[in-house]
Image (tube, rainbow, N blue to C red):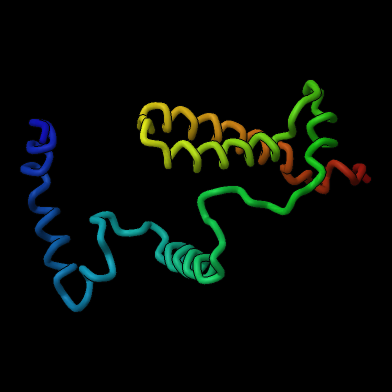
Length: 141
């Protein structure tokens, strides 16, 4: 543990002790496993409920698995060169990551690089599906 971490713990010991005493009441420790309390508790509860619902339906949470849409037309309209669409590239990276994680030679550094590339493709895929504001369709009266 670093010296700065120990200093921070010593300097914040009163806040840590106050938080721990509040969490000792009832089942506080069972409900929370982090020290930071949510800024928006209603949003936190809603996200937890959404997460539980999606997991109960066996839906993946961490990846963008939208229904296959016409990515080729959106990619072409943005002036990108011919080649695989963002959806195809994303699916390829997902498959490659699954394969690479099962290999004996799996290096964490290389795995992180592949995940970064997958995330870049995911960002480009989302950018192609951004919602257009209705103001763009309605002329000023």
